[in-house]
Length: 206
Image 1 (tube, helix red, strand yellow):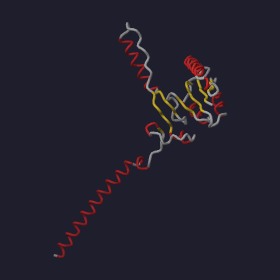
Image 2 (tube, helix red, strand yellow):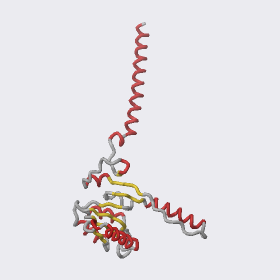
Image 3 (cartoon, one colour):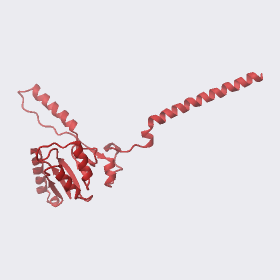
């Protein structure tokens, strides 16, 4: 079962309508998708704690509760700890606290694009408003969460992962290079010392 989480905002209501339209057009998903609109973080944690790894939770948009209180980083950490099902996201807010990830839209990139459009409007106030451009999405997966839920995606292209443990050679690359350089220098010094010792012995014997 796929549980799609949205909030009480206008955006959340629009997204729920879009999902309802999708279900109307694809009836085979009717019994596979459940929309949840929690009143607050505690209600959300209680619900997802009742799930299991056969379920999937998708955070579509849940940034504030029914009273308008904006979720904090601490809330995201607690939500991930409470969940007994893998969490997927469509925005990078809250990533890095245990969610698997997903096809992510970057909040930073959206902000840059919004600033560009605003600058265009201010520079040309008499012209019609420019069309909204959809931001590019990219796959981002938390390696630790993928392993935790046994999703079998460890062999995906490494570029899509973050929070992935580094190999010994990568983690200590600087130290290995430094040790290698010191070893070469010491080898040269030892060879030179051996060479001069031999010369000194020859000169003494002569």
